[in-house]
Image 1 (cartoon, rainbow, N blue to C red):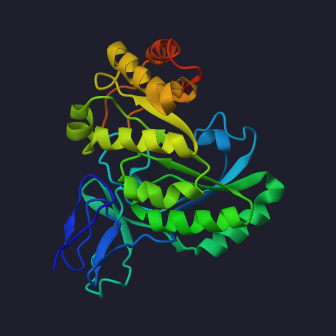
Image 2: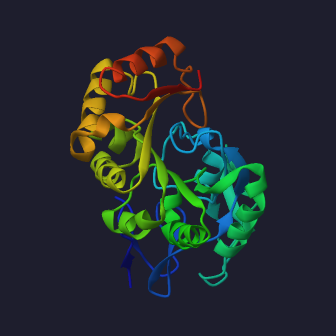
Length: 300
């Protein structure tokens, strides 16, 4: 019997043992579970500014963890090795994890991973306090597709007096957001463009779902937004003005205080267009400053 996953806009209907479009949610014995729960492909102690978060505990560090899979299909993905990774089919029962592989041209390459429990990560984070660590950041791949691990780990971190951060594309249902928001202190959310066509045809996503997520999250925790500028795709002055006007309208008209990071694209993964001109990033950032109080440029 098919079971529907309600995490993102794809609403995948999954047969027993089948994995959804994100590559990390699977029907196991009639229940949709996160096959990437606690399965980490990346772990580092990063400056908080690298998330990027400019106005949340600046000058500190944060234990940053990533898993695999993503709900979008950005052709310019900066972390495609883990975002596009999948469990290789082995013929084992559906609840037995298989090796991780990611596409590399016409072949597949194996991806290393390690299993961590929420308690193990909490213990590690506490050990790193002496190096400036304030908590944990769920980042690198899309953490929302494994929201159960985010919730369980964040709750434990709060019990131990540490901060929790999520770096996300924001494409998830309000039900999922409601599960994690009480335990999240800050988010950086990608607002990758501001037209439904861009999200639907270029990214395989849903702009309205992302906007609803941002509006709700900004009411419950510290939120900063990032827009990666792709030449010829989302780089018009008109779009920037429309987007920043919408941001300013959030939080009962107090959204102008939400920081925006305007970032420069470089060729990566399947998208080989030349890098965004630095002057384009600066020009669009200046337009954003007409409406927003805190605008930062990145990758310039």
